Every structure is written in C-alpha cells, then in structure tokens.
Image (cartoon, rainbow, N blue to C red; front, side, top):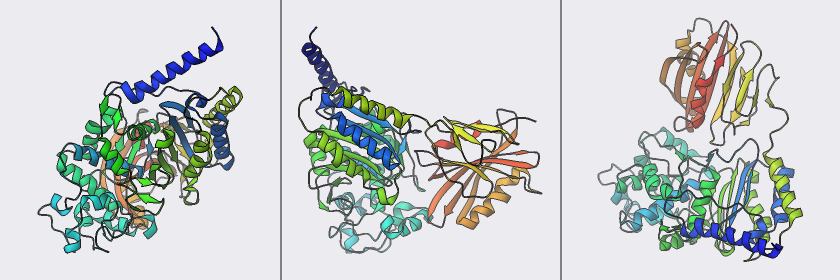
Length: 534
C-alpha cells in the first residue's frame, strides 16, 4: 500500500476517534482521546519538545502537562514521581468546576436567575453587619467576585480572613456576616468565601452535597470517577478549592467547555452558560478579565487557575485544551502561561494536519520518557540506614528497622523537625512525616498522642483537639495506636494530623499525615507500617 494511502487511513482513524470523544460518544462512556503525533493535530513536535526541554533545564516543579488538540492527545507528560493515575490537588481550579455546577442548576431550573439575592437562599439565618448593600448582593456578584464583602482571605492579605474563617464553626454564617467593604458590583476583589457560598447555595437548591450533585450532573456524564473533595466545618464542600482530580479528568472539563457544553451525544451544560460564564465581565488581577469563576484574557483564552501553578487552559480559536499540574513557588506562578504562549500557541499553527516529522517526534518521545524516568538513586535523607524511599516503598535498616507503603507519586521534602528522618509531599497536598525518637519516659503508648504530641501542637498553633485514639495491631503483630488530632497551624489554617505510633524497646516510631480539612488520601497508608526484627 502506498505511503499516501497509509497516511490517509491513519488520519481517518484519528478523526473518527475525535468524533467519538467530542461528537458521537454515548453518554457516560469513558472514551479516552486517541494518542497521536502532534503533526496529526496540526502541531509541531519540535515546539512541544522545546517546551519540555525548557521545563527540564529550569528544574521547574511542573508535575504533568496534558495537551489535547482537535480531540487528539498530542502530549501527556509526567515528571517523576508523579503518575497518570495519581490525583493532584486543584486548589482554585475547583472554583471553575463549581461554576459549571451553578450552570447545571440554572439549566435545570433549580436556580431561577443569577440576580436572585444571596440572602434569599438563607432565610432565617442570623447575619451580622446587615445593611442595604448586603441585601442587594446577588448570585451573579458571587460568581464575578464583586460581592463587596470584606473577605481578606487570599494571599494578597496574608490569608488573614481565612484564618478567622477556620476558627468559626459555622462557615456560611461567618462569611455572610462579614462587613461590607463596598456596594456589590463596584469592583473585583478575590474572595474565597464567595466561592464557598456558591457551594452552600448548591447544597440548598439541590438537597444534596455539592460533591454528590457533581457526581450525578457533571462527573458521571464525563466519565470522571476518581475525585476527592473536602468539606468545611459545617459540612459544606469547599467551593474555593480542596478538590483532587487526575489531569485527564480536568482536561475533560476543558473539552466539555470547548465543545460548548456537549459531551458526545449528550448535552451536559447549555451553550448559553458556557458562553456567558467565560466572558470577561470585570477587570481581573491575575489576568485581564474575570468571568463566572473563570479567568479570561483579551485574546479569547479562558482558564481555571489554582495556587502553585494549576492551570486548565481552553483556547477555542486553536481548538486546544491544556492542563498543567504543578508545585511552583510564587515567583514561577505564571510559568505555565508563558509555556502555553511560547510553545503551544506558536506550535498550534494549522487547522489541518502537518507532514510527519519523525526526528522531532522521536526527540519529544525521548524527553517524555526521560521526564518520567525514576532517578537511579532512591530518595534518601541522612543515609540509607536511616531510611530510603522508592516507588512507594519506604525502608529503614537501622534499629528499629521498619518499612511501610506510601503514595508512589509523593516527592521528597526537606527535614525541619527534631527526630524527623523522612518527609514526603503528595500531589494531593498531604504531607507524610516519619519520626524515630527516644521513647518518652512515663508515657504509655496509649497516652503518647495526648501527653506527648498534643502539647507540641499547642506550641505551634491553637485549638488542639485529640479526636480519635484507638489501639490497632500492625500486620507484623506489633501493638500500635491510631490517632487523629485537629489543630490550627500558626493560628491560621485548620489541619488534621493522622498518626500511627508504635514502641520498640527504648524507641518510638510514628508516622504522621498532615492534611487540610479532614483525613488526607495518604492517611490510608499509615497502617501499612511493619516493624522488623525482634
């Protein structure tokens, strides 16, 4: 068969795959995008390879890059130890997903209009600082971050308002009772509390938790099955963040918007909502304009953006969706946006396929493979005798010898605490610390959490509470205790620490998983601890 006929057949199959994913797939089918060389989607492999090389040369902590163009998966790169099946914390990308849920509720008539007053959703609530400005605050104002509330709960204000919220038992009432800084609609002011109220309103109008509504109305139709989402102290799922999702699943959200609310043959969102929510309604701060919990630039690109460099880009003009998952420091926060514009947009040049470029494609594949390859040496801290970690296994050879399992996508962290021999950070934003200390005198294993740890947490925070403390048996037969402590870190953030503690002769071994707003995903690994030797 001639080369031209082979190429035509390949392109026909790829375009059929695009139709299945973005046009004719059955409702709820979990159909992946066909993996294709970038040239098949009108992109240059050389541009994508140059992008990966720059990320590698900078040593930038970007965990994954997923690029879909014309329904074809042209780049799906993961930096070790992150993996495709690992959920990553989305931070404020969560807001854009909550916006989609508001759109579904509006489409279904559960919400009558966006100009309905916020206080009308909470009749009988005891609200402080009530005035005419607050009475005029609407759902639209929450969506566009123009509510006028004096939130002060972002990094711009040093998270002061967030710290005050964390101390409250009723977060909805706390946010509604904030003073008004100005009249609603006057000015954009980023407010995490406004997004929390959106989740509370969804809970009110649907009669179910926001996560359950999302599962039924959004995630289910898109084939998204592995989502973590934490709730606040009053049981409302956190509208501003705390969602964990795989990169491919966030890309599905982007493709849904790119296709104007359709997924296969099913309409999940109205085209009207997609269009209205991604308009630039007000001047923004991070980017040019802000829509309904989406950032919008003047060139027609809109994006979901999260702390430490989580990005979902939707570029309608290029028929392109890109997802970056990162752990970037503040000074590199805009790096994914720079990479999008420098490489992806310049490399997405034609509406039709380009000639094959096997040399550039091979270079791209080599860079992808190198990015994902584990280092020759395992993670070590002091020495291999003290402890080393590799591919989800932690091993300590020195006495007391032990081992345990941890999330394979976790990365090494620096040690900062006395007795700490290892520390790992998961893509879900949980921290796992390993300690070996001298066994405290006159403190029984049962008393360890209450008498030894709680006083130390009190030194670094406030409102420390031992919520659980129960005896367990490890798989090696060793007696241990499983504990949970809630506490305020630096009087600002509500944390939960899950622990497993065991004694061996004159030493105490304990593993601690620290997470925000409840048990973290990594906490399930604690009871894999197994002490070895006599």
